[in-house]
Length: 329
Image (cartoon, rainbow, N blue to C red; front, side, top):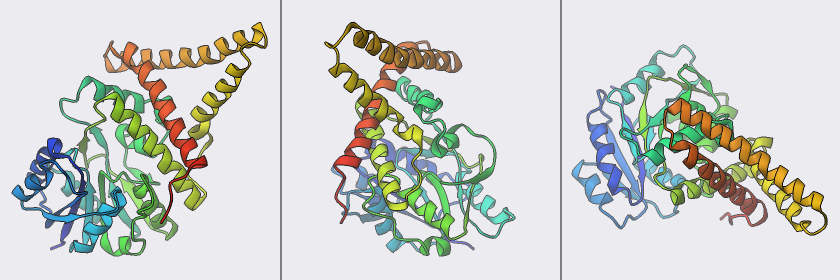
């Protein structure tokens, strides 16, 4: 019988970990072992993990990559699954990942991933985050966003770390996870697999429910961290960075330069109003469309604020990593 190690990185996730592990215990296909890779939590995270009989390891690097690496040192499975501690897995999640891997016709498929959709009873703010992701302005063109909304099986260029299964033998060829990456460690490891000729496959049947950021602060933080990870990945591999990744930063920088000319002439004032007015018009229209699509009229007022703070936070992350990069060990 094939052995399966399930790895869950955690840090102060007591509020969601119990529901996560409860969903794992109810799987139609039970993992051989569950490994909690903890970042020295100060809440009840570790005690909850012990209640569910998990193996517990501790990471020292402060990144998800570090947590994955220390867990893999202890993992014994022939298949390695990853998810997050703020995830609830559908009962047949692991079974669908494994059965897809077993039945796929292509021998070089070594990774199966699936959608991470909205958390049960998600908050209004969490629903708004989903709505943001479902737009071009919110990254709807990305593989991560497509994994939320696309319902077709297909080969993919990356697999989200909250819902993924690997053949251990193939994974070993590209380990370790890059601990210098703030985020994008999953994109990095998947890119290395693709370079070796392996394939990744998305199945819409292997579903996890992933909690979105629950407030403005966590939403801004996530936007900034993902932007930093995007630039770090590009520096390492010279790929993965497209023009639209840089557009928010370019837009706000050019707007600032326009502001410097406020007292030069009346036309500068008109130009600034038109420049930022066009941006506001676009995000208001996008917010209105999402409010209708999701049948949430509060989105008309909430989404414009979130678009602006998300774009500014993303821009700060991009510029910070370009001009004041994080030090790599």
